[in-house]
Image 1 (cartoon, rainbow, N blue to C red):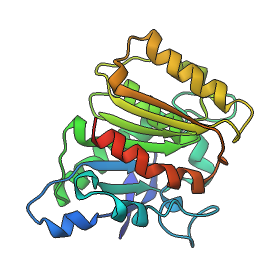
Image 2: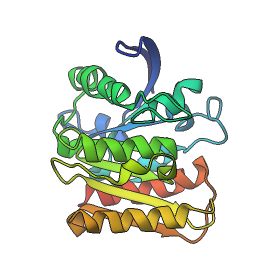
Image 3: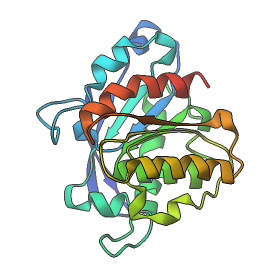
Length: 238
């Protein structure tokens, strides 16, 4: 695990990033890898930094076939800045800093990662993943910056807080995996169903999206970690 603080120059603050290299990175020293950028980085790996329980992504990644392993770049959320950074535009509750946050990933963080690690930098191999508000900004990135993010994992997205999210404006059809459960919140099933029909409405190719509605599961890092392997396998094999 490599932990480093990086300046988000347009936002005027630093952010901790946590990079996990998969086993295959060391086993195949000539091989280059896709990169997955994940929101709420402090919740992904370590019980000591997680809000509740971690996603335990080290164990999940180690259990995947070597062909599905990717470089994980966790970006910590900014505490009280979290809502603003994950909100695409101004909102009654949050300043909309989402575009500036994505600009940081695209123009500051990604170039550093591609420079120092053995990466596949193309859009097809650049993935963004998040849950709740992090799922909102990840979906936004994959549908508004699809020239950069060719794949996205969207867990239990908080789309209700930003209805314009459904106005998809894709230059390319990124591959998007959306997941949530009927029991985690009152409106999640309706949100996921609306997302499915939004893909249909915008003539999104059926092979480029998958909407999974689980019967049970709490809105928590535990569920997202449990579903992470299925998400990665689908994204990497489609």
